[in-house]
Length: 237
Length: 164
Image: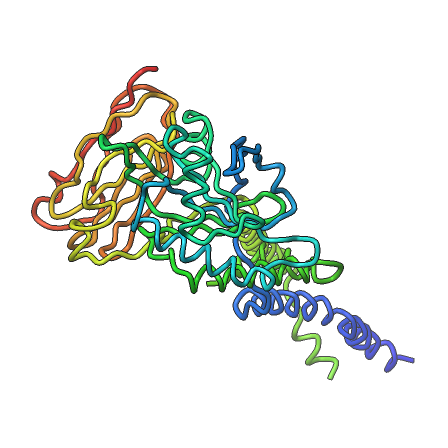
């Protein structure tokens, strides 16, 4: 009886530790899992940069084009003017390579659309835009050329997409060549700028693949994995 | 056996302090995790790479200065070198949001804009970027706060915010 009494406290400690070690192991596994996810990045996403601006423009056929018309589509934007010549070649090359391979980046029910915004509604008339479209090989079903009222255009392109442009005395424009990728929810997911050396066809195509994959797999349990990837900044290069 | 287990016994007061400090550590870890991931705290990160030898000849730093993206929204490209900023002075109307892009031509510099959150390390070859909303009219000095040589103390400039 006396012997039992001395052993009892020891037994109590042992039996308590039988389940208490779980209190340490579960948080440790959780932390290790989070660190492994954040460092190994099994799921990669494009950052959600900021909401894309709204706009009301007129396209090359004279029809109205708004940001709401493009909701539910992945949209790649570029900016220029019909007289920009060789300065716009890198931008048009990117757009053409996306246009040629559009089926690859479109997902079920979420097509990919291209939009080039023009700075100068006076010179960039629908006729001028149509002629320009022919010269750069635009597929009108997929690629819109559009312009609008100058003050609003400045708010959209400069304020919203953060692409700088300013008129020159000869009727041309000084501008920073850039492409912007917007997802079907209307959120900017990629900015490709000459000044940051990211205006490159390879980078744009690679990131379009990443976005298309997210749009395809972002359902049910996959959604949690993608949200985790956003939370832990697992960004694709 | 029993005696060994008993020897693990920790003084009650000591145990309380150990638990309290462990809880504090957990709170600090959570605070860092939550603020960095969910609080939207932006650490100044390199936004672009440039060649410091040619940065003053091509690209936006060839003509550094202020440019207007849209009414009330500006970008300021500032090139730093020993021992000055180019430009030394920029003027914007009150209520503007100004994004500063700063890089260095030579050694490491710093960029601190008084009265705002703008505080960046300027590393040659990289562009640092931060945005400030300047609502109050007045003069805001920006200084180099990273020791860069003999003339370090003379390396400053100012942002003039004019009333609307």
